[in-house]
Length: 72
Image (cartoon, rainbow, N blue to C red):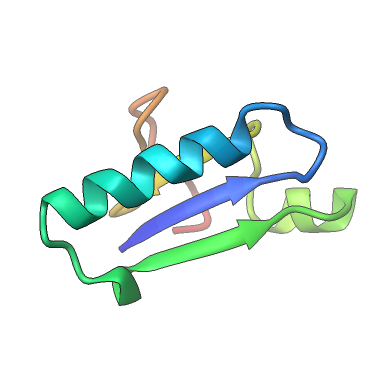
């Protein structure tokens, strides 16, 4: 499972998502294994333990910090 978290005002999210989709395609990963989550408010950020935009979580591990996301 891959989760992509972002918020719309983030200037980097669209390019990061584009890169992630390219990698998923190149590695023949099923696109159904990707969940794209738009963090719209503080409540959502708390619910998902949102650490920043964009965040990519693979099998419960944040690829940037290598820490387990407690929600996953």
